[in-house]
Length: 334
Image 1 (spheres, one colour):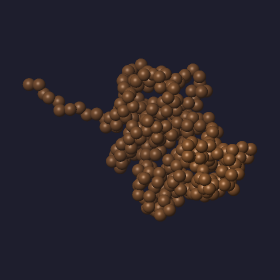
Image 2 (cartoon, helix red, strand yellow; image 1 turned 60 degrees about the vertical axis):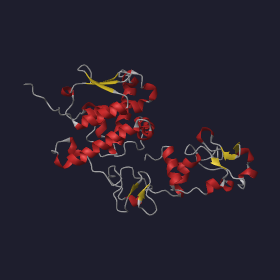
Image 3 (cartoon, one colour; image 1 turned 180 degrees about the horizontal axis):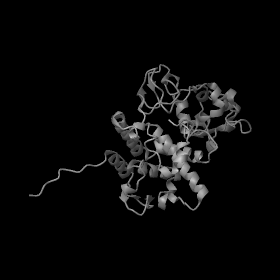
Image 4 (tube, helix red, strand yellow; image 1 turned 135 degrees about the horizontal axis):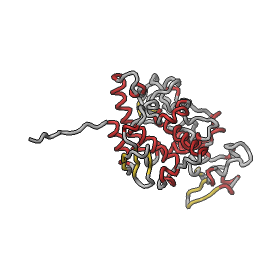
């Protein structure tokens, strides 16, 4: 009599990331003659598990290739291995380092940096990364990684990618306390009330720009909070008028234009600055800069401040529109 096998066991973490790849339209194959390779069409080929480093996983390998694709940009999706050329050592190293910085920033959101670290041969650079992997610095990899961040967290791939990271963090919450000390699961970090990992030093939510004045709601994550809630890794200090000159988000790409009302003095004093679309009158922003900005002064100084429209006068520092403008120009990574 033939014995019926009711099913086979599969690694649940593999399942999460294979589903992520499938949602991106990727196939994942295995072959002994590569470590990880993208064919420029739809297939990511990974080596067999026996060739993995001890700290590698299918999850990390898929995540790393997704991040490579994000850093290289959409023009490289149809290129073998995302257009990376290992013969160009200097450029390849910068691109690889940018990939590491973006991967660190993404895994930091869910307390997974140590668990989903790149393969061991690249670890010296990874291990030397600061807590804010996308922060300011002179590393040429930083601008590449920062440029890819918006697409990673708000672009068309963000749904499958962030869902997989959240599901991995959910597993970590269940496994962490039961894991052996040398297990990567034991190196994951708990998450805060907003669903992402805690900031290492920022304190509590009430000091964050994204908390409401009543400190009962996080505007970035649309979650209820309390004043004593630990701040998450995307904490930002509260803003005031002293920040405006270095920001200018509301005067550039943060918004497409600023409306001008009939009673605004700029109509009479500087009619040359006014554009119109039917009944709608506005100050345009060619090249992402408002026409009212001083072309010869500091970058975001208004040349018509005394006669600025009511839309500008009513703009509140630190309010929802201010924070959304900062997010759109890349000054906020939330």
